[in-house]
Image (cartoon, rainbow, N blue to C red):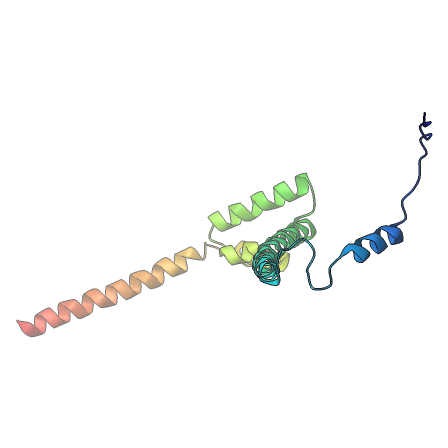
Length: 153
């Protein structure tokens, strides 16, 4: 006897029907895809540890990236964009080279502006005050050493 082939039809498979088939074929005492409960629990622990490690790494990377983006945003707000940013950074580098504390340059605009205003009002660089005080300390140390030597003789 000859049987006729059925015509092809595009039938969508219902998700509820698939779940029903899967659940009806499961054994109640067996965990799907594992031969025994011990294998399931070992795999669960391994996944738990690797997921925690992955979470720490992703969290750390996200925190680093957010921090980096916040710094870029702060630079953009502080310096402007494009050529303005380049010029402002060059000015700050020149100020640091002239003796401005580096944390002034890394802080808000007001710190750098205050330092520049103060330095422009001075008749000589502030670094000369530092050199002078260091020379005074060295002179006093030399005098004490001489006095100590004179007392020994």
